[in-house]
Image: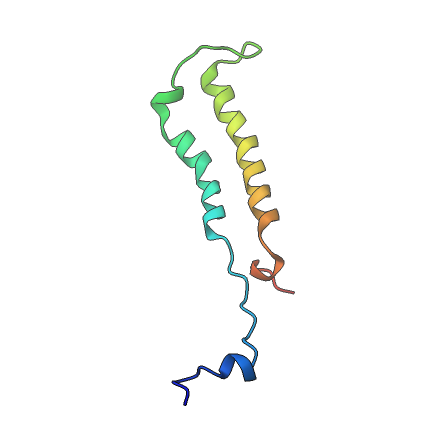
Length: 86
């Protein structure tokens, strides 16, 4: 005598589980907000890069880094989890 659905695995194969999206990967997008939100860290003139003060080139570099992080997160997502299902 079997208890519950002990024989279900033998007679009926289990449904394949859908792969869950990695929501933790989306947290990488928060890194630029944290880096730029802490203004006292980069509120200084030196070191200069090509004559541009640190305050400016630090912020501009995070624009590029943020775009690369966003592209990485987008590329790592599976097409089935994206919003634009066509």
